[in-house]
Length: 303
Length: 303
Image 1: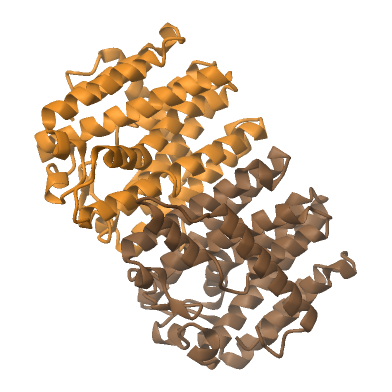
Image 2 (image 1 turned 90 degrees about the vertical axis):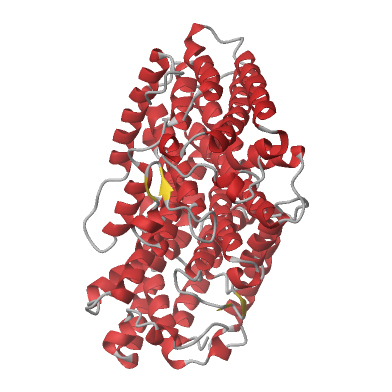
């Protein structure tokens, strides 16, 4: 987090959210005794104490636009981070991307074993939906049901899982994917969950339709910019700076815009998307400044 | 389904529910075009057209006690069956039970591949929660949120996933599990989801607490009886009659009550549990006769 590209106010707010999310996850996933303790250990290992928590930050900052109680936003943020963590655990499995390193430490199937990694991912997904549905998340059950409905869409076959399927098929395909197909792959694989994260604050705040729509559009463009910037970093940064193996996309023959357009044109496209994301916030006031700063940082970061 | 132990009225009702569940799943998981079509194909392969649909039948019959619209009950039944199907797909993976055959056809990772099986399971779980949260399931959002909350508990680390974790550990443990631990393993692994299935009808019908509690208790005892009967069948029936590999528990050194108590004592315990399950229905009238018949059949079936 000592990235010089990050403004101090954003760094501080991200660190605050990350600490609060870890505390929330610790409460939602308490350590247990008994034969299934290993499963909880793996779930906590996968979800607590790692990552920038960008998705949770989007929930918290989105919710703040509408004066939502911070405890509500943190529970939804924790749910999104559990969902995200499960997807990383499964993506890292030998049958998928086969990765040994994640956030600078051994992946779950390396630290535990493959069966435990599959089950920990499965249980994290259930915990994400369960957390959203519990009364502590919001007093209005219509809000809770809407959060579940939208997260399920973002996470399922027409969202994250569908994107990962396209990605797996691309690795073995004879022809390279074209630009629209790569765009769609990334929209599904990472974009939908980032979009949901931004939109969730508006759902929690029962925001007017236009503002909910604006936050979702911000999240969609931010997610696209983030993914391209991630691919650029994978192609240009070191493993040490990333905390995960660099250059693996090219090694795996992954379909990325960097591979198709080259680093410079991909970077320019990410910058355009980050500017577009900020324009969706025009009807929000100063209170959305951190969301604007996040969009700029997303394409300027070095790790 | 040509089991002579099954009363014709029960056979007919089960077949009716199974057909209606397949139609509901076909609507919830429509075939799609595009790069992710393979994922939908695998999800449909895993979930449509197989099994007795006992869990969905419990939802439908439970809901019928309270005059709930059949379309609502079928959507919840479809959600439970998707959740159950995902658990079978993941349990069959090479890193888990490593099974090639399920319901008489190749398992998903055999018919497709391992990555597709992992993703199809993940997406089926998301679809289960998404289906519960959609307005078509029930007009009252409090009912929808409660269904999600309870299914998440039944499916997660303190339910199905936790039970499967204990089961995986038991295979490599030096000591055999004792009777209480096996009971707890089976309560978590299969019991909680069957309990939820029975309870879901009462949630849909906003039933008085005592009746909801009675249906849940019926489901809990039925689930325990079902699991022991399943283990007895695994030890005594043929692969052909089961449509899945027989004798695999003993081969895998699985912790079952049959292994601990022997076939006869395990069978007697299943019968006691099935009787106990029926007694929980004492405050229900004739309308619960099919639920009573199911409890009896569970321990008398030959496949």
